[in-house]
Image 1 (cartoon, rainbow over the protein chains, first blue to last red):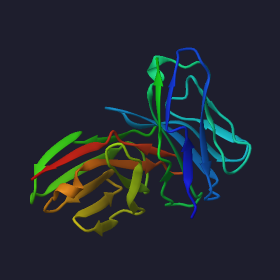
Image 2 (image 1 turned 90 degrees about the horizontal axis):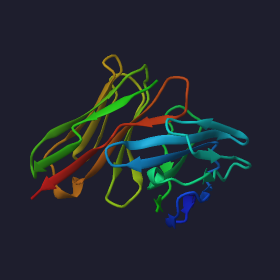
Image 3 (image 1 turned 135 degrees about the vertical axis):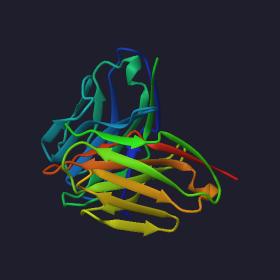
Length: 113
Length: 111
């Protein structure tokens, strides 16, 4: 069965370190998204991609970057982790058709100490 | 810029009661989605609403969309404990594929 997987599930890091969260989908979806979830804010869009070599900034992109070298993967990099980036991160994908729902990964709990 | 607001943020209700969650958005759209999230879990799709007046029902949940009012509602009928979860609406602005989420409504159904 097709799926979307995130790794690691949990990560603890120190302030200032570079961190990369992995997202891999086997749906063959062109659209991929990264969100962070924080209490009181719901899900906020960090970056998104509509296809290979396409990346776009979302609502809260400062301090984050993504790259899309193939259809299956959209890794999220925190260039220099900050305590404000402690959050739960969700990767999602969708078809590029009107009315396509999002398929979510299981999430990554990131703690920056 | 598209903004999505949900209310209430928290809802505690007795089993057997009815209630409605509201989702307002700020720009033109006819594509609205509802998701459910259980504690510590990921999000799962509940409903996809793609036109003005669209209504979808699944069990005790019914969702509707009024694109003119930029409003969607998620109505809960005769709530049961299993419906306790956080519910999110998400909107796609016209001409884009990105999804903007509301803040979520945390529902607790008391026995």
